[in-house]
Length: 217
Ligand SMILES: Cc1cc2nc3c(=O)[nH]c(=O)nc-3n(C[C@H](O)[C@H](O)[C@H](O)COP(=O)(O)O)c2cc1C
Image (spheres, rainbow, N blue to C red):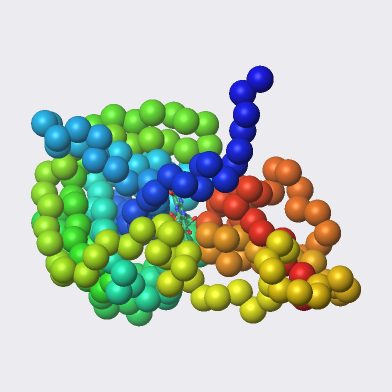
């Protein structure tokens, strides 16, 4: 039988992006770590978007996008604004000034990014929980020389450090615990209880149980 070590999946490296779109008068976007260039001639990129995201539905209908490449200078607030809340509940661009609109009115992000890629959806693939959008690149623009943030850079340097210890950390004496919390290693969402249900999905960033760590305090 094939071996499945979930830690091997963590070794894949990812970039981080703000994926934005516009439908009618509404602009919206979400954080994604799944942007890749898939072909160079024609120039195409692809990203997978969770069907629960408003950005997903808007993108399916509008067919136009911008992918702003997040850099190491990005503040955590950029992730909070675009990754921890849905455009179904809030206007993510309200009170936010660090963006501009491209020629078709899709926003791109000016703060904590180093470039953006604009284009149109070429093809979609239904992946169950997500849709894979394969897109034609119609424009690409540099904004700064700050290095691109990897997902692992985000985990180590941008995401605030946990206030408690993760189970398994070498912290000496943790025999007595009064509270068990499961923390999403992607966005920091906390769920209190002894055992996280197998089908649990983070309500903020939609990542599965395997992305949670057990915290005792
Ligand atoms: C670091 C990070 C990475 C994420 N990666 C993805 C991703 O690859 N695909 C995805 O669909 N959502 C991803 N998300 C979750 C969405 O950004 C999040 O669910 C967002 O609130 C959706 O907003 P919307 O409903 O306005 O589209 C990520 C969130 C964070 C914080």
